[in-house]
Figure 1 (cartoon, rainbow, N blue to C red):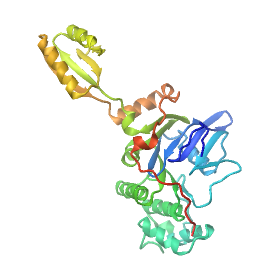
Figure 2: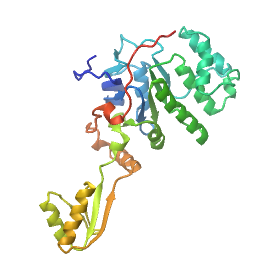
Figure 3: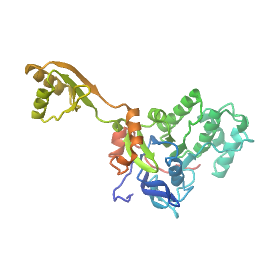
Figure 4: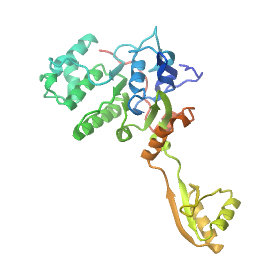
Length: 339
């Protein structure tokens, strides 16, 4: 199928073009161009109020876009077109269930609504680790169990796409690990594409190889977390920085002199090249005191992005060759039977 940019993206589970959601003069989502590879976990990362939940509601058709286009599972969706029920599962702003009913009865209600057999309810509860707790009232579940129940209700139709809004929010450390492992296992074993939102970098880092980072409704970065960090640089401390600078310039390497530390900062270069460079400096009578390769941590890169969002709103960071960079195995966007 062709997207608005005129090209085909058979390996994308979700794509949006210029997506906008405005409430009066306030734009909760502003010009979002998402590219979500099929068959893995995609992290929607950003601070509270960034527009993550609104984006998910737009994708699900729970709210209508002010402008822009959306494609899910190879199909354009909008006012007149929707995805077949059951192909997309979701848990938005926390699990939704009837507390007076058991976990099993809650899932049976969803199964009945989707025209699925009763057995689907017990099967999905086993899948999310709630076997043995099926007949307990949902009101008596722990917070982690409630999250699992919410995910079970989203999974009961065996969806191809699963949207989870802050699924580990408020959980204790043990429950966070359990829910995280469950989400990753689902993506790996079931071939489900999972979009998971969070404001916690460390959580997304553990689950999603590809991310979209948003703030104030704008997409600031899209790609792998590894590529978010700069390539790095090398710091050289030598006995004569002036002479060393001249030698580097002659080789097409443009150093930056850091007066505070009395070091020369150059771009990251391969080990053999830096070895030859050090040998050349020494052969010209220079003493090399230190050679250090440095790179921003992921946390530093993320915080810098958040502190200067206006520098990145121009969409300089758009995911290129999505599947190749992420390393995720593509999955076919085939319709599954609703049994």
